[in-house]
Length: 394
Image 1: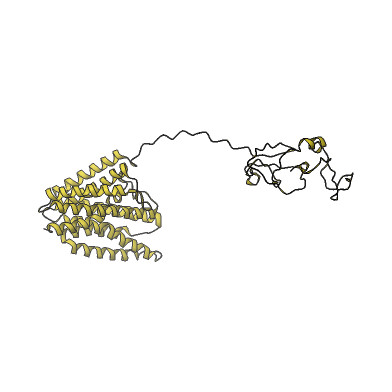
Image 2: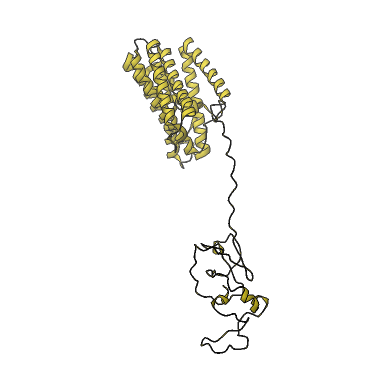
């Protein structure tokens, strides 16, 4: 702040006594040396300069908020380090025209940003290779239909192969991501035996095979060091229940007289439910269903799954299942949409815990076998039970 604004002009380096006596004609110790910036003529010229609040002297970096402009005008710094005086009120109503005296640092008024062009709308992507997904899906469907309606035993073999591959994918990912070594050999042998036992002996055979598989996992793991035994066998028993035991209900559906058509209904409803959820969610999805588990799923997609599955269920029960009724198909479709969605979310939880996107890469456009079994496995026991309640087990 320029001290000339408080009284008559003074000569540089001279101070008058506080009592008003004649000025001491001599340099005051510690005063700034006289120079052009303190010339009396300049002091007279700068008298009209408005008083601005003092700002602590420091570097003139504009990015430093200590030197930022104060409200109501520009900020100045006097490099001569003259004595500070109490700041005067600043009027925002009167236009201020600050003049620059000495070395001044100012923050220029920021220029408004130029308007940016709006980004071009991006085309919504399906998120996967639809061509490969459709091709693989049609190929799998052809294998299933041929084996299902030619020889039932061949389809049981297809189920057993899918179970073994699914177990291999699951145990491999557990080992890679978590260091959990669930024993694959007893799981693969016991899983295949479980599917065959369910087809030959029904639910009783499936439960016995499940118990023997769990026992085999416990014994097999004893050949390794005891460190990690509990987590390894726990994961092994979980895998035995999650993959082969739930798949056994598909083989049990096949034992009925219209078994191939029951299995076809089960597969068709699950695929239609997934397709409805995918198509409706991709086109109309706005509200997330479970963002922390599967960000891609929406409530609109769930409604699409329910609508598609209920319509397909009514048609299948009316025209494919002996003694079936359309209203039973509506209930069946509703149940399939719910269990298929829960199954998909359940595997998504597993994959998120493991930090992976897909369980495998065996099926282009789909991921691995487990990525296709996620909706089918929990749906199988529900469809088997409703079929038994609606039309019997014969």
